[in-house]
Amino acid sequence: MTLEESLVMSAEEARAKTKTSISEASYEKLQTIVALIDEAINEGHYTCSFEGTIDKRTEEVLTLKGYKVTRGSQYNESYVNISWKE
Image (cartoon, rainbow, N blue to C red; front, side, top):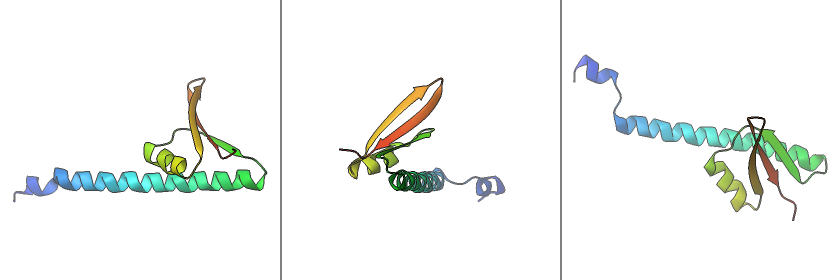
């Protein structure tokens, strides 16, 4: 293997690292959302919102658990609403 070849990781390694990175980011985002849900519950609310976006996997996890997830945009700012009211 040449010095140049050893410098560049394989595409397979890059894919594996990317998958790990995506998974870790989703987990961290989900931890933040769980904290927001807990805070809303403690305040007697059935919804919580935050500015920003949510990845598909995190949204799927929440939906599977019975939460309603809606996305929106106002004044070019994205936001997410999460509700657990029947």
